Length: 272
Image (cartoon, rainbow, N blue to C red; front, side, top):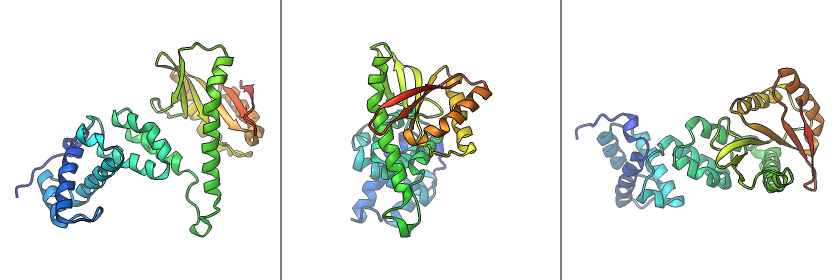
């Protein structure tokens, strides 16, 4: 068979799904296993599209995952849905199905770059993996559980807070997946982003490096003309004064800092 020298971009976007669907059907016609694909099928498609066998295997794996969770995409593949983003979304889904579902539409429409998905995957992975011998009670699982709980509580508090502030009825809260750096939520007015909402489960004694990383994100959000609301758990309130001091010394615009109490009660602090 004559090798067709196609570049990676030739099978980017929706095209890998077209190839994957055909390859998946061919593989299944030769082997009933859902994960073991005949070497002859892999080699034939690798030769046809000028790809390595491992790339074709990734295409088939990605297609099988899409078939399992988003089957409608196979009938009408989105134009801007590269294989890399598909595999990243699959990795996020394996760790946090709810987060994957929240960002799926943005991924399918090409609104999230590989870099942005890498950051989301990093956040999902953060603190998740610990020593296998302590898997049942490892601190990482408790940490990610606390973070999810805090995000969920903040999400329920945002709309009442906006109403209390007298914000316009056109204001809406949505996932912060359309701006860079990514944040947990964005408050928009008629689809125009106005407020970046970040939820940080900071420890009582937060390292200087972690604070500086947070400040970098705050600066970039402010450079886009966004106000910033930061939500932290009650136990992190001791470190807020240091954060406020750094913000003031750095010449950043003040940000709203909200401390989430044990019973969902917040009291507000103004930085700067």
